[in-house]
Amino acid sequence: MGGTIRFLLDGQVQEAAGVDPTATLLEHLRGPLRRTGTKEGCAEGDCGSCTVLVGELTTGDDLAAVRWRAVNSCIQFLPMLDGKAVMTVESLACEGAGGGCAGKPHPVQQAMIDKHGSQCGFCTPGIVMSLYGRAVGACGAGAPVEDVLAGNLCRCTGYGPILEAAREVVREAAPDVAAPLRAIQRETMLSVAYDDPIRGVVRRWLAPRCLSKLAAAAEANPDAAFVAGATDVGLWVTKLRKPPQILIDIGRVPELKAITRAGDALRIGAGVRYVDALETLAGRYPSLGDMMRRLGSTQVRNSGTIGGNIANGSPIGDMPPALIALGATLVLRRGEQVREIPLEDFFVAYGQQDRQPGEFVEAVIVPRGPEGQIFKVYKLSKRFDQDISAVCAAFAITVVDGVVSAARIAFGGMAGTPKRASACEAALVGQAWTRQIVEAAAARLDEDYTPLSDMRASAAYRATTARNLLIRAFLESAQPGVATSVLAEAAYG
Image 1 (cartoon, one colour):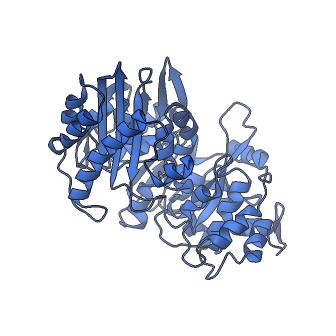
Image 2 (image 1 turned 30 degrees about the vertical axis):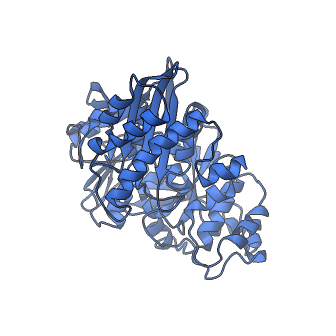
Image 3 (image 1 turned 90 degrees about the vertical axis):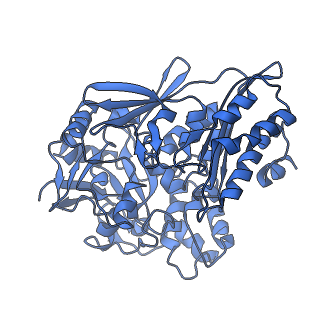
C-alpha cells in the first residue's frame, strides 16, 4: 500500500497513508479522527446528517482565496480531500488553529438551542453545518434558507423552529486557510502525476492534474471508473457494495473545470459542478435554472458535475433532456483523439452509451437558440426538492409570425434513455402555434414513447403528464404570467 493523503482540519495537517481509496471522508472522521458529531444516516447523500464544509484553493496563479462548499461526507472518497480543508460540527466551537475546544456554542448552535430546533438531535449536526455554510457563503451566494435546508431531512420539528433559528444567523467570514493549503500544495501530493497513485490493498486511485495525463491514464486503464463529484459512484460503494478496482479522479484537471465561450455557444467542461454552472445557465435559460435549483440538494449541487450526469447515462438524469432540446454537442476524448457527436446520439440504449474503452467525456457544447425561441424545462417528482424525476421534459420551439419553424423536444423518464420526440416535433413544424395544433401534436407523443410503470410513476401517469407538459409550455408562451403551478400562482397573486 502507498500514497499519502494530506488535508487540513482546524488548522492541523492530517495525513492518511495506505488507505483504501474508496474509504469515505465520513468513515475517516468517525473512525481514526473520532469526529463523531458528524452522523451517518442514509449513506447515499440524501439526508444531510453527514454534512461538512470542504475548502479548496480557487484556480488562478496567485491561489489567493479559498472557496468553501457544504458537501455530504458519506459519499466523498477520502482521496478527494487531498490538498483541501475540512470543517466539521466540532470545528465551530474550537479555539483557533490548534487549541482544543472552548465548549461554547457557536451562534448557529445557540440559535438552534434557543429556538428549540432539535428534538432527537441526530440530524442536528448536519443542519448546523448547512446553516453555518450559508452564513459563510458555502451554500451559494444569498441562497434562500429553504433551498439550503432542502438537503437536510428532519422528522421531529417540522422545520418551523429550524427556520426560526436560521433567521437568527448572520453572515460571517469563513476561516482563512489559504496559506496552510498553499503549504500543503508544495508538499509531495498524490495528484502530482497519475502514476503516483493512492494504493489500497486491491484498489488504486489515480489523480492526474492535466488533460493529457488524464487521457493517458484513461487509455492505460480502460476499465477504470471516472470520479467527478462521486454523487453516483459513491453509491456503488456505500449501497451496492461494489467498489471499483481502479478509480480516476477528474477533479484535479483545470481544463475540465472551465466554462468558456466560443461565439454564442457555451463550452462546459466535464468537471464543472452544478453550482458553478447554475448562474451562467440560468442567466441564459431561466427555465433551466429553475429546474437546476431542484436538481439534488445544495450538497449534491456543490459536488456533482454536469459531465458526470451525462456520462453515467441514466434515463432519469435531469440535465440531458434540456441539453438535447438545446441541440448540445458532446466532446469525447480517447488519448489524443477527440470527436464530437450530437448529445442525443450518445445514449444508445438503457445502460449503453457511445463511449469506447478508455474514452471519456471532455465537455458539452451548448449553442444559443435563435432569438425569440421558447425554451421550457419541467421536472415532475413526488417531492418538490431533492427527488428523482418521474418525468423531465424540455421544449425548444421557435415560432416565426405565428408558425412553428423549428422544434426540439426531449424527455427523460419516458424511455430507456433520454430521447427526442420526433413524431411530436414533426406534428408541430410548419403549423400554427395554437392550442388546437399543440393538443394534436401532444397526442403524437404516444408514438414516440412507451413508458414503464415503476415506483416513481405509472405508465399512464407518465403518458398523460407528458402531453400536459407540452400544453403547459404553450399556455405559458401564449399567456405570459399565467399561473400553471402552485409556485406560479403564489408569485402572480
